[in-house]
Image (cartoon, rainbow, N blue to C red; front, side, top):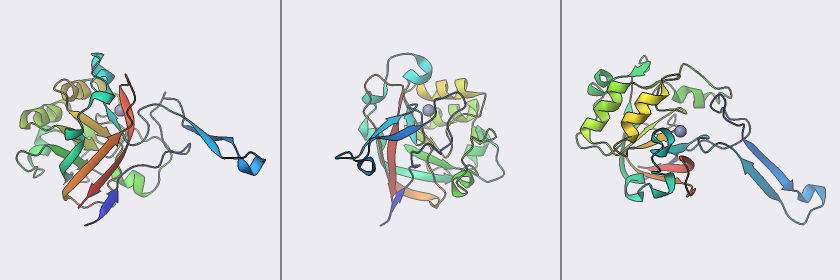
Length: 210
Ligand SMILES: [Zn+2]
């Protein structure tokens, strides 16, 4: 049994979504400067690094992040390899991806994981995301949580429809997982987003055990 930490480190050097505020993580009390303790301050978008999206993010329906079910956020999960030459995850791609029947939690490992492997600091626009018909396919098979290895589940500049299709039935979207060191297969997922009251998303510590 091994524990895989698939969480991105939160730091001012990490890539953030264009237009989102930069990550601030700074010492506001410093023992090096003579203070009696070290205290840091964090400021960032709730969609920073490894994080979940709640329905409120794209549906404005007040289904917010603190209400996401822990029964969905933890449990058996499958890491599915999407071939490295795939640029868009369509229904056709998913059909061929050997997704186990009745899978509740899927983490899609794509060529995006290479960005984390080489510690890319800049935001990359040509990342792999899920198309609308891919999202509809996931809804049809009854997935409850879907994760991907870049900062959005949807292709850049086509965010809205894919998110809406997944969030409408309450599927938890997990974004920004680093799957570079994880082989495809079955694991137990523990995804624990910060309990941010009324928020549309939250950074999460996410591990796989397998
Ligand atoms: Zn997000």
